[in-house]
Length: 266
Image (cartoon, rainbow, N blue to C red; front, top):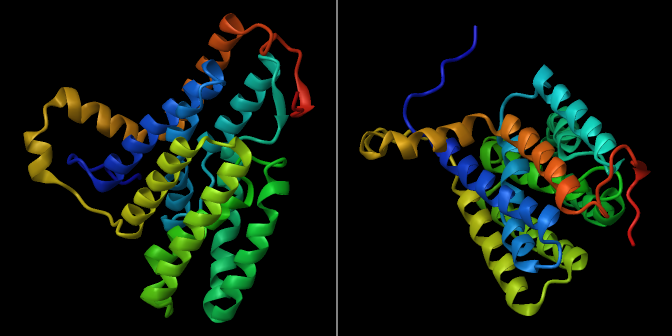
């Protein structure tokens, strides 16, 4: 038996719908407008949400559809002539789900271990980018999500959680700037947007909004709930679609079955 989904719009729906929209903007820039930096600058601010929610979630299961999504994306990279490594963000999600419970259980028993562990994650961000998408930066956001939900119950103070939020934000901004080299205006947009998103995440909690649901037309409510409740399917479908369109719009970048194991720049 599976738990019935709420009829009302929830805080998860709103947060994930926002993240999906930002994700599509980001991927539109990556696949179709790689020379226009604003797509990626705006698109970066949605990244923390996905991995925050993995840490925030109570469940640690790895459903079949997650493995199916991983397989479909690897197959699509082969078909459309891309690289398999770094592995997709779904692999990163799976690794966080497997490990974060054990890691944070140990950090809860020895709270002094949180910051040395996080420092290791920080210094592994760049090399881990080449293994799986977002690397250990994703784990940093996952730890932040765990702290928001479980920190106070495990004797982490409000100050501990706020300080970790600042660490997560600034480490993310630093490494995104190293990767993308945004011009000053777009660095400002990315940085301010990231901080705003993390403040929202710091205050996040599971809520339903029956009054807002009643006042929201179905034509608006249905897409919000679809994006909030079918994020994995949307993620996989739109990436496969974008890769297929890339084969048509940019044959120099995409080519049938001319794939490689490891991504190479230039």
